[in-house]
Image (cartoon, rainbow, N blue to C red; front, top):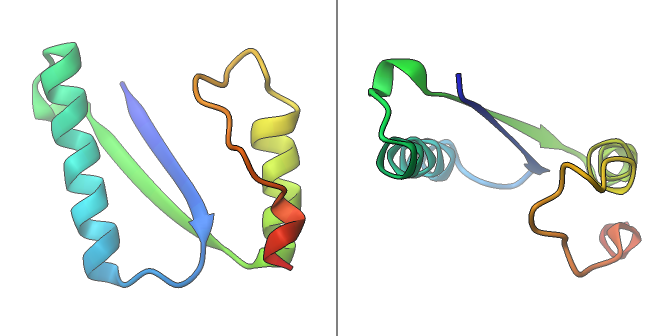
Length: 78
């Protein structure tokens, strides 16, 4: 605890994903004042088609869990 799960469209390099994971980990450590051993980060890539389902399940269907809502239509990626 805590675990951060990043879900995004395919297309980023492994280096970008590694840097993102490290930056997220460091932010969690600094904001929550936790040792790094408690922080985990995963990154999942999705096609634009699969993103439609993920968007609904993770964003549309969970309004109470959302802290920052996106301002785009996921169909714009199709």
